[in-house]
Image 1 (tube, rainbow, N blue to C red):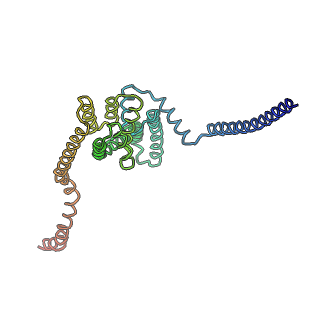
Image 2 (cartoon, rainbow, N blue to C red):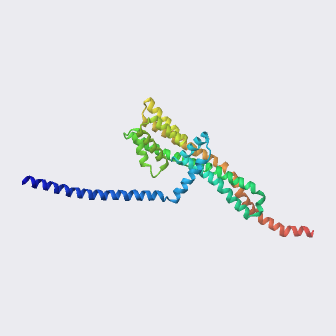
Image 3 (cartoon, rainbow, N blue to C red):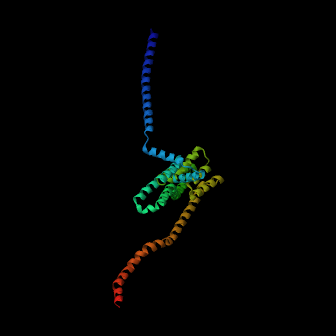
Length: 304
């Protein structure tokens, strides 16, 4: 009797737990199915900007690319801060789209103004050339702008590196701390330091990661800093002492650059003064005299 009661109790508990477990499992499965369905619908209904981006990348894939030109443009895109895998194809797609759209727009403008109809071929060729080579110049300007920001941020980053290293941190931890502290003030150089940290965590040697930093930025001051750090690591000299010496060198160099710009200022002001200030000064000083001559002296000479 006791055995039958225990068996009955076991079967009852097993059935109840099975029902409860299957109910909750079915709820979880239904939730997973709903999430999968929503994900599939989201993939089917893509955002218009994503569709346009995909179309531009497909156009870029149609444009023939030489390996040398692709390598050069990839370096420029890296230095401008565009490091996604499809950045190069997007750039070529924009070039193709602008090379087609700008001549169409120029043809509409020429049709609206018959006075410039004789120069239609030259205008269309200029519009196509602008659409084809304009993005290259824009990327070059963006890379120069970013390099300028990195060059300006380097003294502050170097001072912070000196402080971190002298306080007892290693070079890797100092670079990581510098990337955290200067995130809002100088985001460009923080991105580069963050990539150095990621490369070091991925297993690359420090010298290789630092050389990649110099290659990505293309800034001469960063290359000099990388050379100092590699030499200090190779020959076993103190990193803090090397960084402090390089910091003093950079301060002296920046002071010399500022003095050089101040010395060139007088020469650069000659042309604005000659073309902008002297004509207005000439009108103010000589204008009343010329008016008086035309009113009084010329009639007197005619009477004589």
